[in-house]
Every structure is written in structure tokens, then in C-alpha cells.
Length: 304
Image (spheres, rainbow, N blue to C red):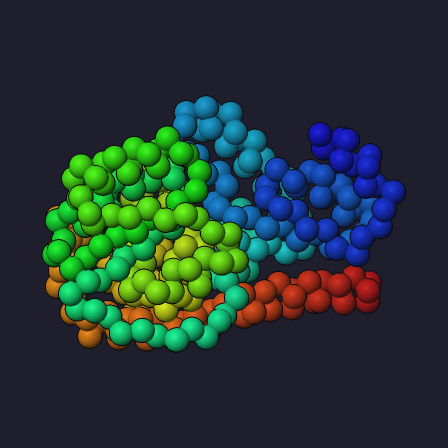
């Protein structure tokens, strides 16, 4: 496939080459050399540990990724990634320091709404992935005060979604709803009427532990307070911006106790902090980093 792609595009000419993920590196590097163009590498995760739970990955794929990074990424003119911790680890292990570009959506000024102290609406959206153990959030709501209600807006594994629906009906009847998904550009407006975004992601691997996923920024841009477990990446963000609460563990008992202690006034304050964060961290501010980086590389190439 790499050879076919090279044959199809080598006769073209580009001023800059962007490699999307590690597997594009050999082709992107070869084209950058052919065209004497700057090479930018976009790494979405800490690639060597992306599927570290799988022995096949550890045995066969991870060594290849490390070779690609050592052989090609160290020669890239710039690298970008999605979290400061990932950038730090790449720097420590491979010697290049990526620019951090957060997965934030476009900023839209949304009106706030009054929270009903008797009915607090939680929302979780994203992929229906069994490894994420979404049942933990259902178990949490089961143990919460009756004022808490949870809605899921999920895409992906329909069998798992049906399992979650049946599980919710059994253990938390009437307190968990399942919504039809919307396109990514519609998510923020769709979830804005809710009160809190909810995500429990156990750090079952390195990338999960330091993740700053797009749903976190969707919550913030929708003006929602946020409830997360003690995943280091998300917990640090929530504490820095004071836009939510961090449960002391992933145990539904502990998470429910964290939510039960909240008043409507505290949730309102967190929602205000989320809107402050959204105004400062959004697609415009993050993409400005990419534009500046590419402009700098293109000017340098032109001068050379």
C-alpha cells in the first residue's frame, strides 16, 4: 500500500508533508525528501503503548513503531500530539518534543440554564466500547440520590448498546436513557441542555491514564460541569479549571458519594468555570498553533 501510494503521488509537488500517525511515516518521509519539503508528524496517542494490553501488539507491533519513531520521527521538522504528558514522554524516550494541540471544538457562546435541584441530568457520549466498562456509570447512578439521571449517546457496538440498555433497565429502572447519536459537529449543541458531563475511564493502559479525550472538551464547550474518575490526565484538567469534580476512585460507591455531596449552586459554579475554559481552549486557539508551526516551517524552507 505504501508503494502504491508513493507511485500515485510522487509526480505531484507539495510544499509541506503532514504524516497522520506513525504508520504514515515511511511514505511521508520519502515524499518530503523527494520534494525537499518540511515534514510534520501528527501523533494522536503515545503510539508504542496504544494497545499494550494485547500481547500480539507488545510482541510484534510495538517494536516496529519504536523503529519507525527512531528512524523517521526524529528527522521530522515538527511533531504534534494531543496531551502534554504524551509530549513529555516522547521527548524523554525519543528526543523530539511535540507541540501539544488539544482536541477542542469550535467555540460557541451558549446560554446557561437553571439547574433543577430535584433533577440533575448527566450525559455521556462517545463510542460503545466494552473495554471502557460503561456499566460503571450505570452502577453509579443506581447508588446516587434520586435527583440524578443519566443519558447515554453512543455509537459503535450495537450489541454492547443493547446490553447496556438491558442492564440499566434491570439495575436502575427509569433513571438511564439512551439517545440517538448526532454528528460530531452537532454534539456540543445537543448536550448543552444537560447539567453535567460524566466519564469514568479506568487507567487500564498508559494512554487511558493520561487521556484528554475530545468528549472532555465537548462537555466543557457545552457549559457542563464535569465528573470524572481519578484518571491523571482528565483529573488534572478538571482541577486546574475547577470545572467539575474528581472522584477518589472508580468504585461506583465512591463516585456516587462525590456526586451526592454536590449542591445545585456548586454545579452552577462549575458550569461557569467550564465556559471560561472553553473561551480560552477551543479549535481557534489550538489550530493557531498548527498554523503558526506550518508558517514557520514554510518560511524557513523558502529562505533555504
